[in-house]
Image 1 (cartoon, protein in one colour):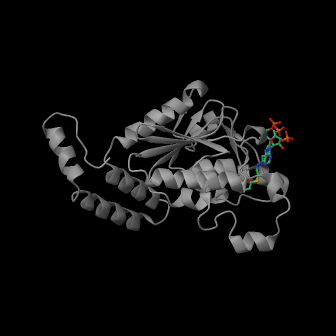
Image 2: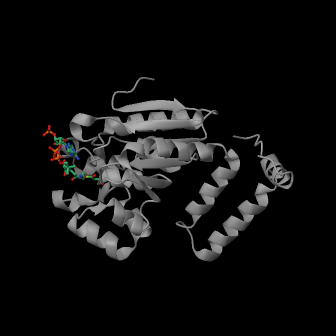
Image 3: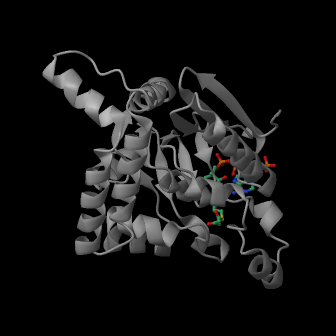
Amino acid sequence: MSYELIQVEIQGAVGLIRLHRPDAMNALSVALINEVGVALQALEQDEAIGAIVLSGGEKVFAAGADLKEMQSKAFTELYLTDFPQLPGSGWERLERRRKPVIAAVSGYALGGGCEMAMACDFILASNTARFGQPEISVGTLPGAGGTQRLARAVGKAKAMEMCLTGRMMDAEEAERVGLVSRIVPVAELEAEAIKTAARIAAMSRPIAMMVKESVDQAFESGLSAGLMFERRAFASSFSFEDRTEGMAAFAEKRRPEFKHR
Ligand code: CAA
């Protein structure tokens, strides 16, 4: 498959998807989102891939949904297609995937760009990253999870202020409030994200998937149900050969040779 609006690279057990629409600030047109979906599905199905990095350019991760494309849309079309989450769309594939995805954000991550980064499992940011939900400035509101994920990530006060004013948050503030896991110098961001993804890919894949499912559960259910989910996942990890190998390797003071990675 050849792509026009993204670039895809394989580095060992890591798949890299780079948004690449530099003439439009990586605006997330339907065509670009669909390419992301196709690439994600291919990487999900590729047994050699254990983790994925989603990055943009140095100046911009993505400046949101394509406003010029969206301008002429009407309610009926959005409603009928459940825009932007229609089944099989890139957004849906990003939400439903099972392999861990790290967002590597440099420069602007605005509107749908911020939402796309938040739909990944965690965000590594460069010192130049700027996050925002400026949809209110163009007479609409976040439509790909912004009000929900931002509120869960940074709490009501910050989320409400950002969505109501369109104010941007810089990398330092984003790290302080827990929107991003770490800040990396801009020139090192992509390499650091790939290194981090490679570290995840070297773990047992089914265990990494269970970890992801369990942390995700914290945002889906109450504490008792989440703790129960975790205990059940923990117990079922004992059915994996990789759990036997991991603990044997610890006892024998050697590195584990996980079978499923
Ligand atoms: N959609 C379409 N085109 C966009 C775009 C977008 N979201 N953002 C930037 N562009 C285009 C500009 O129109 C411009 O194109 P032309 O050269 O053809 O005029 C080009 O990219 C460069 O942009 P700027 O000249 O504006 O660059 P800048 O450096 O001065 O500003 C910016 C950068 C602050 C990101 C500014 O472009 C901006 O504010 N963009 C819009 C951000 C926004 O409102 N995003 C929310 C979109 S709605 C949404 O995302 C809904 C949802 O939840 C699903």
